[in-house]
Image: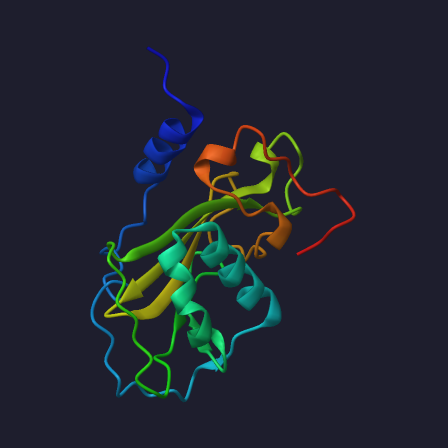
Amino acid sequence: MHKSLAEHLSEVRRAIPVGDHAPQTNVTAPINDHVDLTDYRPITPQEKAIVTAMLHSSDPAALAFLPQLEGMLVIPNCTCGCPSITFAPPPDDTRIPFPHQNIVADMYGYANDMPPEANNGMMGLILWQAGGKLSGLEIYDLAGRPEGRPYPLPNVETIHTAEQTSTHKRASPGSRS
Protein backbone atom coordinates (compact mmCIF):
# COMPACT_ATOMS: atom_id res chain seq x y z
CA MET A 1 0.00 0.00 0.00
CA HIS A 2 1.29 3.46 -0.92
CA LYS A 3 1.65 6.15 1.70
CA SER A 4 -0.15 9.42 1.30
CA LEU A 5 1.93 12.53 0.75
CA ALA A 6 0.93 13.71 4.24
CA GLU A 7 2.25 10.48 5.79
CA HIS A 8 5.47 10.75 3.79
CA LEU A 9 6.04 14.39 4.81
CA SER A 10 5.38 13.51 8.43
CA GLU A 11 8.09 10.83 8.26
CA VAL A 12 10.50 13.25 6.57
CA ARG A 13 9.87 15.85 9.27
CA ARG A 14 10.64 13.36 12.02
CA ALA A 15 13.84 12.29 10.25
CA ILE A 16 15.34 15.77 9.90
CA PRO A 17 18.43 16.02 12.10
CA VAL A 18 18.35 18.80 14.65
CA GLY A 19 22.11 19.19 14.86
CA ASP A 20 24.55 17.95 17.42
CA HIS A 21 22.92 19.75 20.32
CA ALA A 22 20.18 18.54 22.60
CA PRO A 23 16.63 18.98 21.32
CA GLN A 24 15.06 22.30 22.23
CA THR A 25 12.97 21.74 25.31
CA ASN A 26 12.11 25.36 25.99
CA VAL A 27 9.23 25.41 23.52
CA THR A 28 7.21 22.79 25.38
CA ALA A 29 8.25 23.51 28.96
CA PRO A 30 5.94 25.62 31.10
CA ILE A 31 6.61 29.29 30.51
CA ASN A 32 8.27 31.23 33.30
CA ASP A 33 6.33 34.46 33.65
CA HIS A 34 9.43 36.23 34.99
CA VAL A 35 11.39 36.28 31.73
CA ASP A 36 13.98 38.99 31.11
CA LEU A 37 12.57 40.73 28.03
CA THR A 38 15.65 42.86 27.33
CA ASP A 39 16.56 41.04 24.10
CA TYR A 40 12.99 40.58 22.83
CA ARG A 41 11.53 42.64 20.00
CA PRO A 42 7.97 43.21 18.75
CA ILE A 43 6.60 40.51 16.47
CA THR A 44 6.87 41.62 12.82
CA PRO A 45 3.74 41.96 10.69
CA GLN A 46 4.84 38.98 8.56
CA GLU A 47 5.48 36.77 11.61
CA LYS A 48 2.10 37.76 13.02
CA ALA A 49 0.40 37.03 9.67
CA ILE A 50 2.03 33.57 9.54
CA VAL A 51 0.94 32.68 13.07
CA THR A 52 -2.56 34.03 12.38
CA ALA A 53 -2.82 31.95 9.20
CA MET A 54 -1.66 28.86 11.08
CA LEU A 55 -4.22 29.41 13.84
CA HIS A 56 -7.02 29.86 11.30
CA SER A 57 -5.99 26.66 9.47
CA SER A 58 -5.66 24.59 12.63
CA ASP A 59 -8.13 23.17 15.10
CA PRO A 60 -10.98 25.65 15.78
CA ALA A 61 -9.96 25.68 19.46
CA ALA A 62 -6.65 27.27 18.38
CA LEU A 63 -8.41 30.53 17.46
CA ALA A 64 -8.56 31.32 21.19
CA PHE A 65 -4.79 32.04 20.97
CA LEU A 66 -5.32 35.02 18.62
CA PRO A 67 -5.57 37.68 21.40
CA GLN A 68 -2.10 36.65 22.63
CA LEU A 69 -0.57 38.04 19.43
CA GLU A 70 -1.47 41.63 20.32
CA GLY A 71 1.70 43.30 21.57
CA MET A 72 3.60 39.98 21.34
CA LEU A 73 7.36 40.15 21.87
CA VAL A 74 9.66 37.56 20.28
CA ILE A 75 13.28 36.55 20.18
CA PRO A 76 15.10 34.50 17.52
CA ASN A 77 15.97 31.13 19.03
CA CYS A 78 18.15 29.36 16.51
CA THR A 79 21.65 29.62 15.06
CA CYS A 80 21.14 27.28 12.08
CA GLY A 81 19.83 30.04 9.81
CA CYS A 82 16.13 29.32 10.26
CA PRO A 83 13.80 32.16 11.22
CA SER A 84 12.36 30.31 14.25
CA ILE A 85 11.24 32.51 17.15
CA THR A 86 10.34 32.12 20.81
CA PHE A 87 7.40 34.15 22.13
CA ALA A 88 7.60 36.13 25.34
CA PRO A 89 4.79 35.39 27.75
CA PRO A 90 1.96 37.90 27.45
CA PRO A 91 2.00 40.57 30.18
CA ASP A 92 -1.41 39.55 31.50
CA ASP A 93 -2.60 36.12 32.48
CA THR A 94 -4.08 35.31 29.07
CA ARG A 95 -4.04 31.54 29.17
CA ILE A 96 -6.45 29.38 27.28
CA PRO A 97 -7.42 25.81 27.93
CA PHE A 98 -6.06 23.95 24.90
CA PRO A 99 -7.24 20.33 24.95
CA HIS A 100 -4.51 19.03 22.68
CA GLN A 101 -0.78 18.44 22.92
CA ASN A 102 1.81 21.21 22.84
CA ILE A 103 1.69 21.46 19.04
CA VAL A 104 -1.00 23.94 18.07
CA ALA A 105 -0.38 23.71 14.31
CA ASP A 106 1.96 21.69 12.07
CA MET A 107 2.08 23.08 8.54
CA TYR A 108 4.19 23.73 5.47
CA GLY A 109 4.99 26.77 3.37
CA TYR A 110 7.27 28.06 0.63
CA ALA A 111 9.72 30.92 0.20
CA ASN A 112 11.05 32.11 -3.13
CA ASP A 113 14.70 31.94 -2.14
CA MET A 114 15.46 28.61 -3.86
CA PRO A 115 15.46 27.46 -7.48
CA PRO A 116 12.33 25.48 -8.43
CA GLU A 117 14.21 22.17 -8.56
CA ALA A 118 15.13 22.54 -4.85
CA ASN A 119 11.75 21.31 -3.59
CA ASN A 120 10.31 24.76 -4.37
CA GLY A 121 11.76 26.41 -1.26
CA MET A 122 9.59 24.24 0.99
CA MET A 123 9.81 24.53 4.77
CA GLY A 124 7.95 23.14 7.74
CA LEU A 125 6.30 25.23 10.45
CA ILE A 126 5.30 24.14 13.93
CA LEU A 127 3.44 26.47 16.28
CA TRP A 128 3.95 25.54 19.96
CA GLN A 129 2.07 26.32 23.16
CA ALA A 130 2.77 25.55 26.79
CA GLY A 131 0.48 26.10 29.72
CA GLY A 132 -2.15 27.79 27.57
CA LYS A 133 0.27 30.35 26.11
CA LEU A 134 1.86 30.45 22.67
CA SER A 135 5.53 29.64 23.19
CA GLY A 136 7.22 29.50 19.81
CA LEU A 137 7.21 29.17 16.05
CA GLU A 138 9.65 26.59 14.73
CA ILE A 139 10.54 26.85 11.04
CA TYR A 140 12.68 24.15 9.44
CA ASP A 141 14.09 23.67 5.97
CA LEU A 142 12.83 21.02 3.56
CA ALA A 143 14.54 22.41 0.44
CA GLY A 144 18.23 21.80 1.14
CA ARG A 145 19.26 25.30 2.12
CA PRO A 146 22.89 25.63 3.29
CA GLU A 147 23.11 25.21 7.06
CA GLY A 148 24.08 28.33 9.00
CA ARG A 149 22.90 30.68 6.24
CA PRO A 150 19.79 32.71 7.14
CA TYR A 151 16.70 32.08 5.07
CA PRO A 152 13.41 33.96 4.86
CA LEU A 153 10.03 33.33 6.35
CA PRO A 154 7.59 31.56 4.05
CA ASN A 155 5.11 33.54 1.99
CA VAL A 156 1.91 33.72 4.06
CA GLU A 157 -0.30 32.72 1.12
CA THR A 158 1.61 29.43 0.76
CA ILE A 159 0.99 28.11 4.29
CA HIS A 160 -0.95 24.87 4.18
CA THR A 161 -1.54 21.58 5.97
CA ALA A 162 0.14 18.31 5.00
CA GLU A 163 -3.11 17.15 3.42
CA GLN A 164 -3.04 20.15 1.07
CA THR A 165 0.60 19.67 0.04
CA SER A 166 -0.07 17.71 -3.15
CA THR A 167 -2.42 20.41 -4.47
CA HIS A 168 -0.66 23.50 -3.14
CA LYS A 169 1.63 25.44 -5.42
CA ARG A 170 4.60 27.61 -4.69
CA ALA A 171 3.94 31.35 -4.64
CA SER A 172 4.48 33.11 -7.92
CA PRO A 173 8.02 34.43 -8.53
CA GLY A 174 6.80 38.02 -8.09
CA SER A 175 5.66 37.50 -4.50
CA ARG A 176 8.41 37.76 -1.93
CA SER A 177 8.47 37.04 1.77
